[in-house]
Length: 402
Image (cartoon, rainbow, N blue to C red; front, top):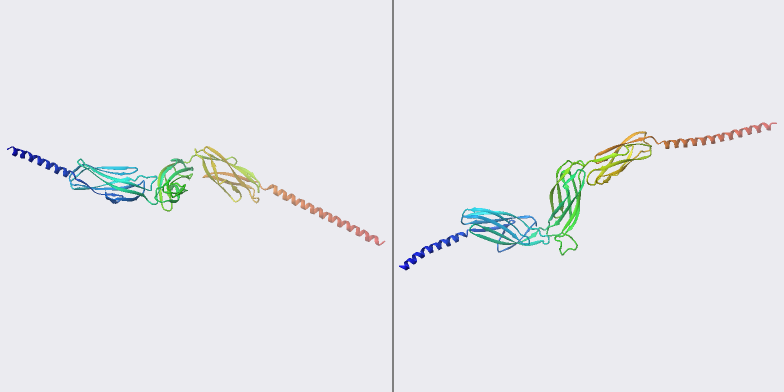
């Protein structure tokens, strides 16, 4: 009887144990089907080398399934190496026999001293009942030819007419050497651009195949905003390129109305004799808080020859006196002639009062008078000599008859 009771008591225990084992087996419900790294399907038993742009993001797509209903499902990916990056997404509840695909975008860390680097990609899926994980070995190699703009420094608010510097640092983030690199700064909406030569860049700073060369370069590009540029916010485009690679970044810059520039004439009108020259004084006042370079030009008729400096630099809050030279040709008729000096759209009008080349005319008259006097004296002397000779001849003839 006691044996029967023991068997009776064991039966429920065995049933409970069987149910526990079945429930435990059913808990193993999640499964990672495949993982794609930058569109490449990975396997836990293999090692892969993938070429990507260092510092850029790559897509990681995780496909997984569940046999039974799962709660609080979460997927996490981690790229582990010298520098680690990770990301996770909550999926929540999944129905039994369902399949999901979760997309991540991981930024591949930029290594300053390595052209390739090895990472381990961990993919982990958890629920309220279990946790599964796979790992994959990936070696990331740089693209053969790649340039990056590391920094752009400039004054974000300037005035129209100003010339401002743009400081740019570029780096060779490719696998191979990059020769003859250039940096260009431009504001396309204003039609202005400027370029500078950055030289050759090696792949890494301590690359043994090259001596005394750098993998990065710092250059300054100067842009001059037109004097009549409308106020507003513009795109400042920075481009780095060589024969094999190019990259660009876009920044914003605010341009205000031109700071007041005053152009004054110290002398506006002068009397000038034909064949002579005169100097006029033009004063340029720069009220801006930065130094400016002004472009000058002169406008005049063919009756005058006017010259001005083509470029003049004026310091911040300073003034500069410019000499405008007007020359009157010797054949210019008397009268008043006007001309102007233009300082980037600001014009100042001058007048030249031509009074005739009196010195030249007087000299000519005096010279002619002297010549005529000399001729008259010579003729008079000749006439006296002739008259004198005639008188002597007549007297001798008369005397011979006696």
